Length: 279
Image (cartoon, rainbow, N blue to C red; front, side, top):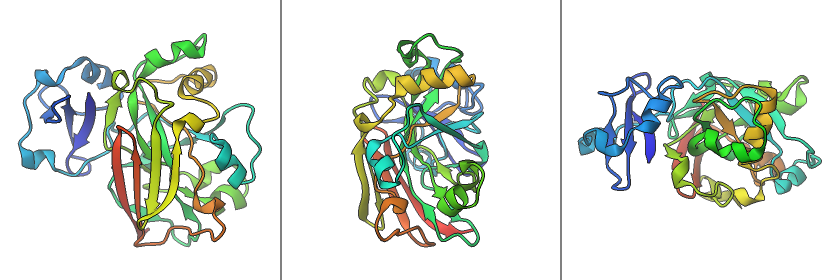
């Protein structure tokens, strides 16, 4: 099952699609897909609601969960990315946070911060939590806490992140810096999250092309590990890290500028397309 939100910003309707590919309106059941309603949405089947008219199904796509409680991000989680950015391979996951305010739709405009010359892209598998994960006993318990998977672009401003002191959070939390979606594919339809190809292009030029099999710490380990240091709640999002091919790691550092078009895709999870604008 795919779970999404269609409509104008702030007025998205909750929708769901099954094997037939038809989007159906959930508005008669829940007001929105939120951390509070996610469990109810997961319990529904596409046959429980009526199909949307074709025109309505083609509306703007919003982020598939409204205002997640937190977006937990993992840094340096692919060996080739660690090498290209001159990082040692971490012995434990590198963790930082993004606010819910960064989350926008998968095709929404991304705003380059004022004065920025080092805004970068990062295609990532995103994990959406479906039930509380608190001090899990082992990674084997993690999968039961996952609602599903989607695509994230963990947009980063490298000067703020790496050159201005303090934590990485400064370079990760500018407005629009987390396009999410287009949908959540439920965990039962993704039997192996460590076998998904992920790719990113800028103005049609391939920049990232890898597989989640190359992660240093896999999804189960990350959910288990994070449950030891924080409580994961329904609707929380985990950005699991990016492979090599970011602007920071390329010889000519081709950072993003207004007008650039970034396209992302992950096998079975759809695509994103963003045009860069100026804040």
